[in-house]
Every structure is written in C-alpha cells, then in structure tokens.
Length: 216
Ligand SMILES: C[S@@+](CC[C@H](N)C(=O)[O-])C[C@H]1O[C@@H](n2cnc3c(N)ncnc32)[C@H](O)[C@@H]1O
Figure 1 (cartoon, rainbow, N blue to C red):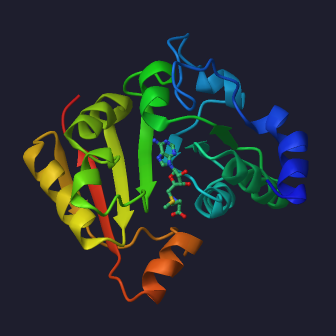
Figure 2 (cartoon, rainbow, N blue to C red):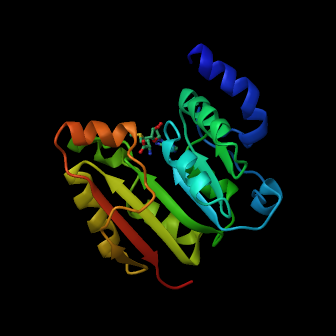
C-alpha cells in the first residue's frame, strides 16, 4: 500500500469495513452469524452489492447518486479497499460498507437469502486462457448463489470487455430459466473505471447485461 492508502485504511476501515471471521483460505470467510444490514447501516433501505469493487469508482459514484440506498462492496485486494475508503471519505456519505473478502464465501456465509436488491459485477477478472476459464467468477454455480441472495424482484448487472467472457455470461444465464435478460444497455450510472478505460483503449467492445430474477 502507498502512504495515502495506509492513511485511509487506518482512519476509515474501523468505520466502514465490516469485520468478519476468516475461513480456511487467505481471503475466504468462515461460517458465522449472518449480517444484519439494517443494524449495520442504522436504517432499512434497498441493498446493492458490488462484487470486486476494485478502486471504488463505481461505489463512490453510486452512493452519492443514490443516498437512499445501502451499498456493500466485496473486494479481496487490501490496497483497493484502502483506495475505495479514500474515495468514499471524499464523498461525505455514509451509505457504503466494504467487506475485505472473497465474495463467494462472503455471500454464502454472511448474507441472508432473498435480501439483496441488486448485485453488480463490473469487469470481473477475465481469466482469458481457456485452461483458466474455470476460475472465472460468473458460472452456473455463481448464478445459483446470486438467485438465492437476490430479493424476488432482484437484478443482476454484469459488464465485461472480453468477448469470450461475455459469450460465457450469456450462455450461463440463457441456460438458467430463473433469470431473464432485461437489457444490454450500459447501466445509466455506471462510471468509466480505470479497468474499463484500459479495455476501451485496447479497442475492445464493452458488453453490459441486466438480468432479472424470476420466481422466489
Ligand atoms: C478487473 S477488476 C475490476 C474492478 C471494478 N469492478 C472496475 O470495474 O473497475 C476485478 C476486481 O475484482 C476483485 N476480485 C476478484 N475476485 C474476487 C472475489 N472472488 N471476491 C471479491 N473481489 C474479487 C479483484 O481484486 C479486482 O479488484
């Protein structure tokens, strides 16, 4: 971490990073009590979860854009958590919390079923080589986990700049009849992040998907 990141982490992590019990792996979460987000935020509000929140550009924009909603970011990389804390501090808002852990084990062990209004996954690590595709976040088992965590009217938003990942995302949700594709338009308030800029600069197409949960 840079000196600035250290400073942000020291100052703001006690306020905005949710303390969770670690699991067997470095970034995993162990079995524990489910989180009570109404208590954590001190209010009941729509819950939006971003998976792999990176440097926090999206969360920082969203919490200002929608002060009436509660936001939670899962991010495994501590320096990115620190940068996000710095950005959130500069917004002056208090409707964001971070969880420094793997989102799969975090969603599984920390988040009550049918409690999240929207899940966002923007520019997940592409794992481009075919032999690494199995490491990709978005998969049939991910779709199943997301379905269980979303509210009955819940929404999943995805974006990627890698065509083969976009094809795989679409195939995954086409096979899962518990979701419908509602839009391929860029989500209105999604800001241009550093990762997206790199994709655009390299000439790659950006793919956006909005899926709606079907059934409860
Ligand atoms: C390519 S970056 C994109 C960051 C951000 N969404 C954006 O659009 O700028 C992917 C991020 O996901 C994080 N990440 C990867 N796997 C994760 C997981 N299982 N749980 C939480 N974060 C994860 C990485 O550390 C990285 O910050």
